[in-house]
Length: 69
Image (cartoon, rainbow, N blue to C red; front, side, top):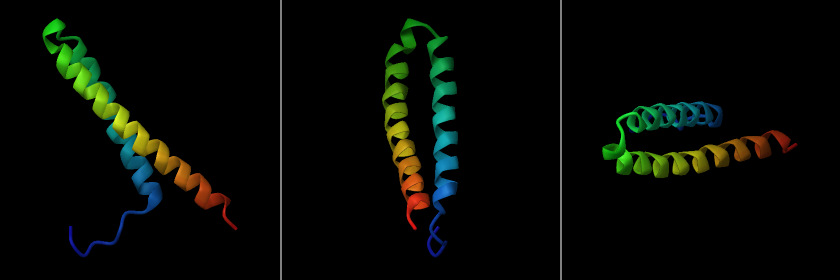
């Protein structure tokens, strides 16, 4: 929302961990639907890869920030 302070880095890491976990659950449920859900499983997999890249970048940023004097 406008005017809200920016999210803290640690909060973003937790948020993306949750988003990633949700993609794992969704992908598993879709896979159980069989061949007709194959494209949906692939799409969730692509989204999952994107989320993982963001999450990894946040983790790396947090690590670098803690190393800085």
